[in-house]
Structures are given as structure tokens and as C-alpha cells.
Length: 406
Image (tube, rainbow, N blue to C red; front, side, top):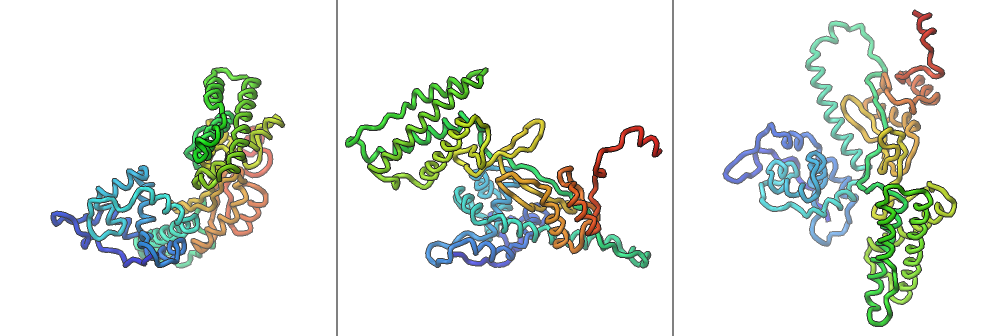
């Protein structure tokens, strides 16, 4: 159940202990007045259940505001809740009418906030805030300009205005650096936990299957802590871990017939499905002497994370979501996010069209990396009167040609 909230509370009406008052020049007070909270109620309510049973859900202002506070302060979920409990300005920012020295919600609510506020909702929130900021900046610039337009009435208005800066990057996921041996060891350990859970109802009736966990752990550490692990030794260690994992999966299949997989909770059942896929991928790469496979899993707990090849000197491969972003007048827009790798050069047309929809005209110049400078993108920019700032195609002139031109 969700109830729409009232309009923005004035900071003078916020009740503080000892008859205190909030400062109007505080950053959180300014930000609270600037964000159009009412526009997001309908978007947020669509992600909630339409049932009228149960306690009312927290407002969209609390959900979005808490995520903003967390990112601005760079704190954990638990620390963010403590900061909100201790700071009256943060409580005003979330729409509370008075200061309360108690936690506004449990830290686990951040999980629900992230699920309810999807990519499209965040994009609309960002567009609403940036459009309002751009409108205010334009108004201020017009007031400063004064009567400059009257001084030069013959100057024509250009069809293309502004600069568009676009780029792509990878947002690193919070996972340990993956290796085949480490992933197999993690899958083996989680499979052993599943065996313990499935055998629990059969304790005293059937003998517990052997897993050789101590021996497998010892062999993994012997290879993982080796300073110089040769290719043959690495393959031998991987083969052993594959054998232990295969044995565990057969044991789980046998136990599932004797008891039931309903003994597993949602996360354990998900891990079981991921472990089966990890075994399939690792076994195929081992048999075919390959180091890559489609949709490769690099984390058991986060199977959606994919390796992203970036070609950087410090980190040639990154693990996380790849994003395409555009910068317009100091405002950043997230144009695309994907856990799978893609060629960001194909996003240039959509980013220019998005610029046109937001601003009302095409950019005067587009600034991008070399990967965006294809013939098709050049032709598209030329058609819409935008200049793609980059060197000309073809082999660059040598020093002799430059001197001849001078």
C-alpha cells in the first residue's frame, strides 16, 4: 500500500528540540527545495503492490533521498541510517516534519529501494532535476546579459548550439579479482554447504556423503599460495577442483531425491543453479584448452557481472557494468548501462538525438574518443550540422608535409 505525500515542507515549520531552527543556506535544505519530489510519486507507486493490506510503504522522497544521501556521503547502508538519525537536516531532506532521535528505517530497506527505483525511473529523476537546473541557469544568464540582444538585433540565431561530450567507462563491481581456480574453490565450498543442509533431515537415517573438503581446501591453498605456478600445475589444480565439484553435484542430485530442494532458501537455490553453470563453463574451457567463453561467470554471488575489456594500461580487464554517459553544460546523463560488453561507438546517434530532445536543438560540436569517429557517425554529425571534433580520417601527415604547408 502506498499513500501520496503532501507538498514540500517549509524549513521554518520543521520542529527541532529546544526551539531551534534550520538554516536556510544549508546544502540539504537547498537541495530539498530544488528536487521536484511530487513528479516521482506516480513512477514510484507503479513499482509497489496495489494491495491495500499491510502497512504503508515509505514515500518516494525517503527512498530516493536516502539513496542520494548514501552516494553523497559515500557511506554504507548502516552508516547512512545512523547519519540520518543524528542529523536534523537529513531528516528534513527526507520530508520528516520534526526531528526524531530514532532510526527512520532499517538498513536492509536500501535493498528494496534499489529494486523499486529502476534504471528508467532514475533517468527520469535525473532529467527532471537537470532540466530545472538548466532553466534556472539560463534565466540567470539572461538577466546578466541585460539588453545585449537589443544592441545587436541583426545577429541570426544559430540552429546548432552547445557542446556535447560523450564517453564510456566501466563501473567496478565489489568482487574479488576472479581466477578459474578461485571460482572453482568458491563453487566447491558453497556446494558443500548445500550438501550439509540437504543431509540435515536425513541425519541418523543415512550416512553423510563424503566431500573431501579438507583435502580439497589443502590442495587449493597449495596452488593459490605458490609464488610461481606453472601452466601444467595450474591445470592440475583446476582438474582436481573440477573433480571435487563434480562429485558434490552428483551428491546433491542424489540427496534431492531422498529429501527435497525445498530445504534450501532462495539464495541457496540460486547459488546451486550458478554452480551448475560454473562447472559447465570451467569444464568446457579445461577440455578445449580455452581461456574464454560466452557469458562467463566471474562471481558466484553476483553472476550478472561480466569481464569488460577496456585496454587500459593499469587494468586491461575490468569487472562491472559498462555505461555510456554524456556531459551537457556541466550535467551528466546516463544514456546506457549494460553488464555485457558493447561497442560504445554505436551510441553516438542516440546520444545526439537525446541532446536534441532535451535542449531543443542539435549540438554545435561533439567531443568523443577515437572509437566514436567512424564514417557513419561523421556522416550523421555532418547531416545535422554538428562538428565531430577529431583529426581527419586516414594516415596523419608527416613533419615534411606540415612544413610544406607552412
